[in-house]
Length: 272
Image 1 (tube, rainbow, N blue to C red):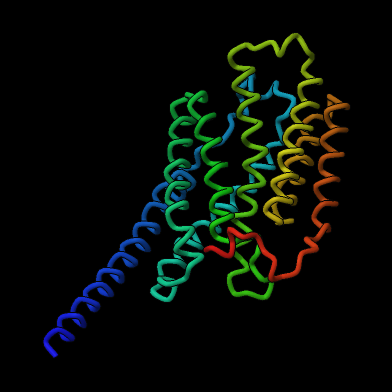
Image 2 (image 1 turned 90 degrees about the vertical axis):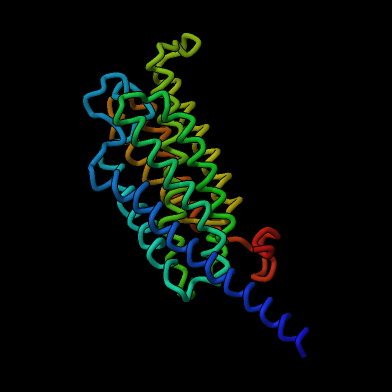
């Protein structure tokens, strides 16, 4: 009987330690998300300076209104941070899987804003690449693309999917701005040619990501960005034309459904 009592105490200790770890994980996720995302957002730091002549000369630049998409993305992240902090979500495998990656996203977002605030845009390029990689990882481990439409957690698709799609656009924008800033001549090709190439390259990456993750909301974020490029690049008809084609392809892809049976979801989803 004594041995069974010791075993019971040991199991209780493990359960208490697990509960404590889960509680700390929930509150750390909440605190870091608000510190890395909410505070910079409330402080109003801009992602791009409208008075930056170099940035405004880039032919892959969307119209300023397009950056309003950060509002539903950040609001969704903050809502998730609050939602996952409730004790009921302690054992939720999706929330548990997303937590460390949302923490990483918040930290990277803070670093990105620091680079912009200090007027060191070259710092933002590697950070944006890491943000995109982290966003894709969050999407995969959280099984965002495989969320049933009638699930109470289907709302998770909005911020995480928009984040991946929009960051594809943002990554190409940051790279093109930085290349222009260092004076790279683009092998002597015209600005219009590079604008078209960036539209083709980014839409290819975007559509591959949309189908790989099987998520039409990613395509909606891409289409939003390309329509904004059409608006911004009216003085460059060819760039606007290709951006319009990319936007139309992304919209069309939203109606292309995965023909696999519901039980044939990606193997990595089944492992979570």
